Image 1 (cartoon, rainbow, N blue to C red):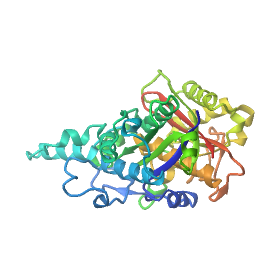
Image 2 (cartoon, helix red, strand yellow):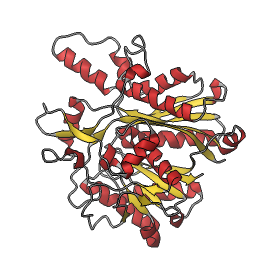
Image 3 (cartoon, rainbow, N blue to C red):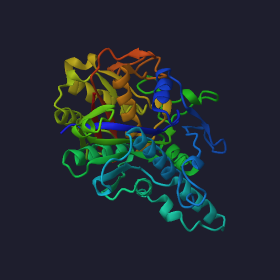
Image 4 (cartoon, one colour):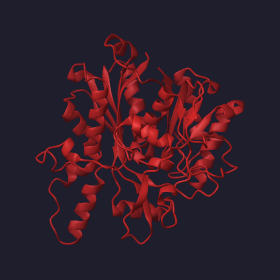
Length: 401
């Protein structure tokens, strides 16, 4: 059974219109800015401009963390784009990825408690990682499975893969699938700085801090946002006359089982090969990869090694870019947002650039998209990769509709 993407919705650092977001990426516009000047070390992140009053009344907002607000908005935009939910409530499911949950609620509770103040009574339901999925379900009256996947950077990619399988197996008629993350708060940023994975930058150069695959890369920048899709069978979409953005043709989820934070090429290769097999495609039939590309010293090299091992002689035909340089690393929502970017690349036959990479690392010997406004030249299939702390690898394969 073919799985069709009939709705897409984003709340991204580049806005909530998918096409305008993609236009900004194609121009190489960075949404990354300096944040939290009070921290000991300079920090940068890609934030979302979001008006919660557009989506919630004042009575609804207590106990609803920013991450759930973003999820409800993106999911609602996807449902609207799909033309509504034309199915019985028990035949609709929500499959959401979220790496951390309500960071703002947790930060506020800790800060207030340390100062001897009152901890908000709704802190627990606000920060629980399954809150975004639950709020999406309540907003749309979903009575089917409502599931949360917390798999670090692969969370929403895993959610999309599991949603597509549920549609294929006939467990649901419609899946609302994606992810949300909103953890740009001082405490979380400080924790990531302590791990020494965030990019450093000179004053005034925060927007160019993240340089995937570049010889002078030194880490990623955090981002926030949400992205959701509506998935259903291609036959069902055809019967109701829905617009199909793309086919989610295959996926795979594997685990390295070697190290909690260090990626493993063999594990990534297993995921890449299994995803292609699930989609019934040979490597040379896939022309674009929206890479995980976090701009870490080890991660980028390992990912390129895995791509070369799987694509072999066809490596030069696979164009590669990481859009994290422009919208930041959305962690639990990264896979979903980057999947939307991949779909738009197929639909519009354009490839977003791998920004801020004036001198590619010789160890990252893949065909990087280094120029803005590059045409896709007939690319009919593409992949989006998410490789997470914990060793989980998730690869999604999309075909042009």
